[in-house]
Structures are given as structure tokens and as C-alpha cells.
Length: 596
Image 1 (cartoon, rainbow, N blue to C red):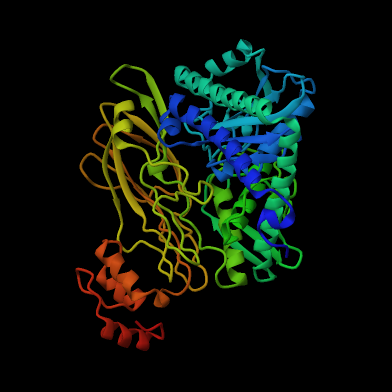
Image 2: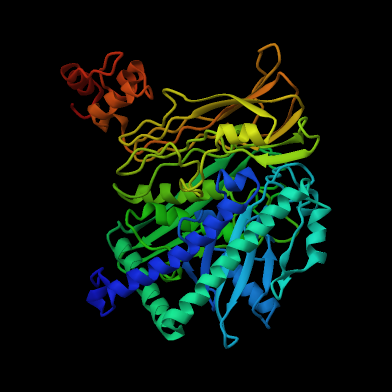
């Protein structure tokens, strides 16, 4: 393979680095605008939004720290659809797309696209700002309607690339449609303005960059940056083991899929060609529930799995994407949906399972690659809460992002406590309890990590987390969609599975309900609370190969008990985490594992 450095191929490496930093800085400025001006806590606390810059011919150029599930595929499809449906683009235009059938992720992710038109009237870039709204007009107060049999029952407003600004002014007729359908219209409009502000900041900064360096220099940079990124991907694949692996996994039962949904993923790695292919076609047809993936999220889930498993720092953009092939089919639950199938939960449940199956398949091909499965999403700690606030009599709705860990063990590192899911990749932020309790009539009783809930391994998964919260002075609805209640995250290469999720209602007398299941809409009265336990991430490699010092450190941190250290890891430690090396050596010898 050619050498990695851009200079070795005749490219100006310093210029590439500086220009890439400029474009990434523009995206970060867009994201900072969204963070500081959005009104919903899911945006200004949890950071459930993304921004990116595309070329005029719809190629992903820069995405900064956006959520992978939002941007790796989809912005290109939406930008192309914008150009096809609105061929006469003008400065001051803005278009809204939240359609699962026209390149978007799911109906709750409102994507605002702005064509960047230079002084000569030439379309040079497209900027996109995407935000997961607290409410999108669904028939039920949640943005994840797992039980919706079709898009009509889901009820969300669908905008398939509709013009919402002309000459930098709102198209009020379109916005009025949202005002009469959104449960908290003032909150929604503030979030919409934040989207507009983010996109316009991106437009302004790109026009400044065009004036500064010129269109020819930028075109040269785009070409070289894409070629360099493609080269990096090919070199990373060249270091991987060749082969094909097929793996299967199952999503928990939900309304419309009472037996759950089994998925199959086939991954082929061709080091000589520097290519990876993922085949998702051998899967069930679209289902009468809200779990169907969109074309964007199906392709993105496969891409996330590949980039996670590369074990190399490859820039994610249209250049590196050239070496990755994802095979989809129409009318497939993880493919290209046909209207009117609902895709309400397209960014989470089956997309998470798909991405984890891809990393697991690559892990089968060789040691040091792939990753175990992250904890499945999303328990009541990430539920959507709604009701009427007794403090002012106004309606409220918001998705919480309380403690939810989910990190998976990989070849070289333990699972992160803040991963949440493979599609979020650690970029989502955990809610501030104080801000949640200030904004909404809610009290968080408890958040803590659960000892002995990690998927054991040479590199362990993160432990699960316990969360309990209640309404204050009112009734409150909680809607959640917790895959992993019955099907645990899968370990790889001898690693153990993660623990399953749990969710129960605590009644006013302190007693607990039976297990509520993977999907439920729960009403909490004053004095009642909901109990959420998220999955622990799965492990990578045999637990008996984990360094005893690491196990002892986990005991000192309270993540693993001495009893589990002995029985699962073959490590003898006392209650304060002091390692007994001779006893550990003897124990592991009897268990057939590594010595201390």
C-alpha cells in the first residue's frame, strides 16, 4: 500500500490539515449555536443534535463531533433530494426534511438544509443542522413509537424537503402546521430557531472562507482530502484479516413483533482490495411496528460498525466511504422502507443491533479487531416524560438522558461509562439532574452504578446503571423502548454477555411491580416512581486473561466484588482490593487461565 502521509503522495499535508481544521471549526460553530440557543433539555443539556458540511454535489465533507447515526449516511441523500425537488436554489433558501422515506433518520430528527450560494449565484456547499426534537407531533407523547403499526398510527408530521425559508424569511404557512400539532409549540419554535441559527452560521462562515481562499483552492482541497481519506481507509483494511463472517442477533418483543426480530449481518473484509462490504439483505420484510430502519439509518448502522471495528483513525467522509459497500434491499426491516411503514425508532434499537452485529462479525475474523456489543437502548432513564407542570399549568415533554452506560469491551480498552450506544459513540451528554428538576416537575431519587453487572472479559464492558425518578405534584407519563430486557448484549472472543435491562414501577407503598417489558407507556402518580436498570456492556476476550492488577482496581472502584473477581476472573483479592498474587496464580492454574 502507498505510505499514509499525504506528503508522500505529493499532497501538501500542512494545507490539508489547516483546511480540514477550518471546516471542522465551521461545523463546531454550528453545533455551539445549537447548544446555546435550543430550548429543549434534550438539546441544550443532552446534546442530541448534529451538524455537517457537504459539497455542492452532496458528498460528506465535515461532521466534527456529530452523532454518527445522524450523519454518516443520510445528509447526502437529503441534499440530493433537495437539489432534485428544488432545482433553482437561491441565497436565503432553507429546507426542512424529517421524512424517513427521503433520506432522513426518523421523524423526530428535524433536518434543516441550507444551500450556500456564492456572490456569483453558484451553489458551493450545503450545510445541514439536525436536532432530535422533544416532541414531533406523534399520536403518543414519545418520539419512539415502537407500537405504531404504520406512519399514520405513528402520527408524526412529515416534511419531505419542504421550503421553510425564502429570502431569509420564514414561510409561515409551513410553520403554522407545526404549531397546531406540537404539544409545546413555544418550546418547539425555540428549537426550530436554533436550527436556523446553526445553519445560517455555517453558511456565513463558508462564504467567508470562499472569499478568503477562493473556490479553486477549496475544490483542490476537497479532491485531495477525499483521496487521502480513501487511502487511509484502504491501508487500515490492508492490516485486517481476510474473510467473511455471518452473525445473528435478536431484538426483544414489541407490539407488532411479538416474537422479537431476528437480524443477520454478513461482513466481508478484502485486505488486498482495501474494501469492506456489509450485506443486510437477508433479513425480514418491514414489520408492522415502529422499529423499521430508514435507508439512511440502515446504511449508517453498517458504516458505524465498520468504522468502530477498523482499529485505526480514519477520517469519516465521502472519500473513506468509497471503500465501504453496504447492500440493502427495499421493503426490508433494515433496508429501504416502503411507505407507510413506521420508522419511529430508526435511530436506536435495530440500528444499534445492526452496528453491534457488524463489529461482532469483524471480531470473529481475527484477534485485535471488532468489538463486543454495547448495552442496548433505551431504558426508562432515557425515557420520554410528559404531563402538565403544576407550577405553571403548562404542558411539558422531554426525553431524559439520565445514567445509561453501555460501553463495550474492545481489543485494547474497557467499555466507557458514557457510551450510551454505539450510534451515539459517547457524544451524547448525561443530563444535569439540577437542570432537569428545575425545568420539569421531576425528582431524581437515585443514580448509581451496579457492581458485578459488567460483561466480563480481558477487556470488560461497562457496568449497568440504576436510576429511579418520580413526578412532583402531578401525574407523569413515561414512554421507553428498552431493548436488551430479554436479549443481552453479546460478548466476543470468549468475553461474557452484558447484563440485561430491567424496568419496574415502584408504588407509593414502596412495593415494586413485575417486570414491565421492553416497551411500555407508564403513568406515574405522585408518590410513585419508575426504576430503570440499563444493560451492562459485553466483554472482549476471556475474563481469565484479564490482568489481575486491573481486576483488583475494579474491586477497589466498587465495580466488581471480591467474590466475582474470584469466580469469574480467577483473581484473589480482599475486600479493599489488595491482590494476592500467589493465590491468583494457583487459582488460574486450576481454571486453565492466564497466570498472575
